[in-house]
Amino acid sequence: MQIALTGASGKLGRVVARELRAAGHRVIGLDRVGERSPDFVRVETTDYGQVIDALTAVNDTHDGVDALVHLAAIPAPGVAPDVATFHNNMLTTFNVFWAAQRLGISKIVYASSETVLGLPFDVDPPYIPVDEEYRPRPESVYSLTKVLEERLADELVRWHPELSITALRFSNVKVPEDYAEFPFDADPRERKWNLWGYIDARDGAHAIQCALEAAPPGFDAFIIAAADTVTTRPNAELVAEVFPKAPLRGGISPADLGVHDTLLSIDKARRLLGYDPQHSWRDHR
Image 1 (cartoon, rainbow, N blue to C red):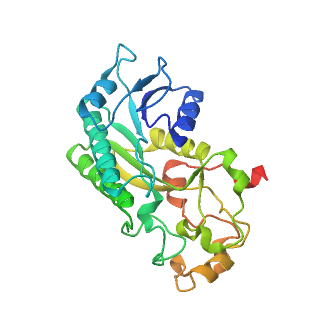
Image 2 (cartoon, one colour):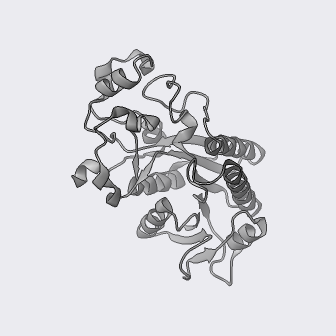
C-alpha cells in the first residue's frame, strides 16, 4: 500500500515509518518538521488546505494514497497550555479525517490514548484489568480531545459506511533506549497513573499494521499495550496496595491477574486484530 503517515517525525511515527517500509509498504511522511526526502512532505496539519493538498500529491511526490495513519498531535497532557492542546488536536484530526473521506481514502488508523480510560486513576478504575467496555472517563483536556476524536470517527463512519476508522488507545510509548530507567519498583504509586503499563514502539507499529490489514468498515477502539508491566513487583501486590477497593473484572481472583501480565487488557486487540506484542523491557536488562 501507499500510506500517508502524519506525525512521521515523532517518537512513535519514526518507528512506524521504518516498520511499515520494512513490511513492503510505501510511506509518505507528513509532519511540521523533518528532513527533506522524496517520501516526506512538510505540512501544517491545522491548515485544511495543506492537508488535502498533501494527501492528493505535492510536486508529484505520489499519485494518491491507499490508507492513512494519523499520529500527529500534541502528545500528552501538560506539554502545551490546555487551550492550545484542544485547538491543535481537534482541528488536526478533523482536517485529516475530513480530507481523507473527501479523497476516497477509506482506511484510517489513528492514535487515540490510554488516557481515555480514566488516567491518572486518582479515582479508582471501575475494575481491573481495564478494557474497552466502559464509558471513556477523560480527566484532562488532552484526554477530552481523544474522547471527542473517537466520537468524531464514530459519526463519520455512520455518515460514510464504507469508511474504516480504527482508534488505537496507545499506552506510554517507549523505545529500547528508554529501558535503562526500568524497572519502576521503588514506589508502586509512581506508575499507578496508567496501571503500570507501556508499549514498545515496535509493537505499536505492529498494531497499526494489524489494523490496516484486518479492520473492517466501521469504527472501533482498541487498547494497545505491551504484554507485561513496567515493574518486577507482582500484580496482586500492586493492586492490593494501590487500588484495594477496585473490583477485579469478572470476579476473578488476584492470582488470575498473572504475575506481570498487563493490566491494560489487550484481549480485544489480540482477538479482532491479531495483535501479538513481541517486545519487553525485560529483554534489555
